[in-house]
Image (cartoon, rainbow, N blue to C red):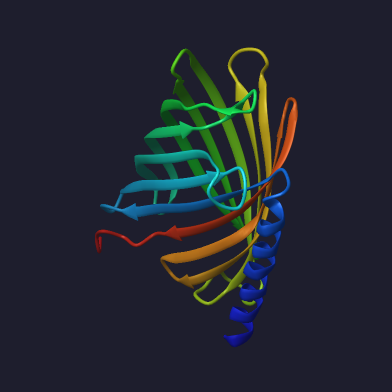
Length: 225
């Protein structure tokens, strides 16, 4: 137990050093909360907040809030969800910060598989994006894998590795929007909570940028059913 916390502590401290260095470089930091809470045997409530910075802390790039209601087609798997997102962006334009607000409707399908120690998740998401002066549609596909390190299963008190790749495609030109590649170290606190700290590289048509990511995941059910 002590060894697990020591490894995670060194990871977080290492990321902290990178974050300090990032204030002088083109490396951002995302702080994220994800909730996926059962509200009945078949229904779940998705809730999410992401605080994204241009640097380690303080220079806001984007505030993203998402929520939605999902339905399990099979027990704890094959979930379809309808959701809404509010996105406040503060990009730099010619050296000056601007503010943009986006409202987003999205539909998604998640399916999970397990092969030995590999926990796979496929997420297909369709987004209708209501921008201040425009309307766009986008498709996203993510393949993620969690691999337990200190135990054979993702049980409480398990240290694990997490990786994913996600591609974003527009419904108009240019079709390619971006691609995200992510790697992290995570820890299962208990059956309903876990944390991750890692790095994500985001490739866009004319830009390639890295992000340090720290995420907390909460699956505490609101019902005993």
